[in-house]
Length: 370
Image 1 (cartoon, one colour):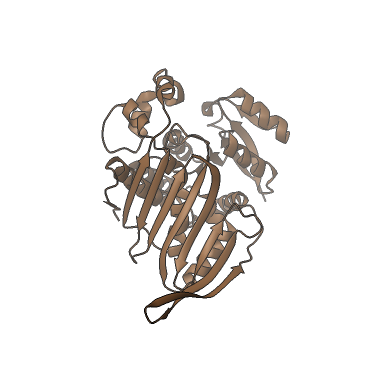
Image 2 (image 1 turned 45 degrees about the horizontal axis):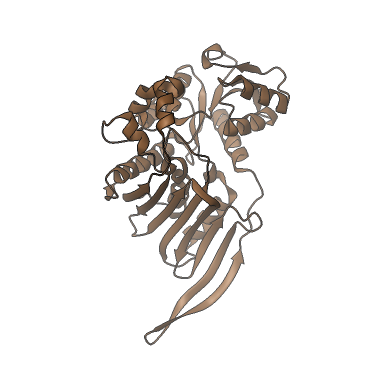
């Protein structure tokens, strides 16, 4: 069976992971790695001994290569729209790092463009391929936790600090995707409040000098509802965000997001009347458990009962490897990935856009359109 020719755009931290997987994948033929920074290209070439792979500093030098059938994009979010649109128009299948883009209108356009050209458009929402998330979905959907009450999540660390999006756009998309999947629902109303601590003055000046696409491009791309200056928008890149998601069933989820917290947390919980399902990614030995327990009423008193801890077995596989496997398989079968298609990515961008509106309005509730 002929291998699928693929190019990786972006050789940063995540792009390097994609290079590693596609370079060794039995169904892939890694043909090119593109990154504007020569030192990054040199690093991946040395690390993986990329014999015969084209190393290029710009997309234009390889975009017309007919032996390439697909591209994997791991570049800043503000670059996604133009790169994806061009790749689809060139006839390439596309796997892109989250978020799909920063505008709902652009996401919709790209989804229609992919269908028009009969090409795969898949978003790398890696957690949707995590075995713990898949197992958790089965537990929640089975009714094992009883009647669902609420959920909460924390995603914090000391960096990395982004300069193109705030902490919410950088981090919340993972937990929103997991809650949506576990519940089998989409939020109908959202709220967000945040705090800004870090100064972005140097970043503003750098953008004005034309790096990273320039201030004008950023002004058009950031998901803010008004037309204030780029400097004011930069000042609103929140470092701490508290998110509330309201689902049709009445279930509420609360998410704490911060990149200024040395206490690294990657923890998500769904609470039911019979117990709580806990996904703690930082616990490598037992990442998924059910903490059983309920409140027993005796007169006017409520006392804990039925308490126990159950460790759930999950497969030992790399989620990103599963993403790449699915992408290559979907290309071969010409079947779109319903789990992480462009349409799924669009829905998540729509939710984040509404959260941004709430954040701008000081935490006012915002309804999520259908």
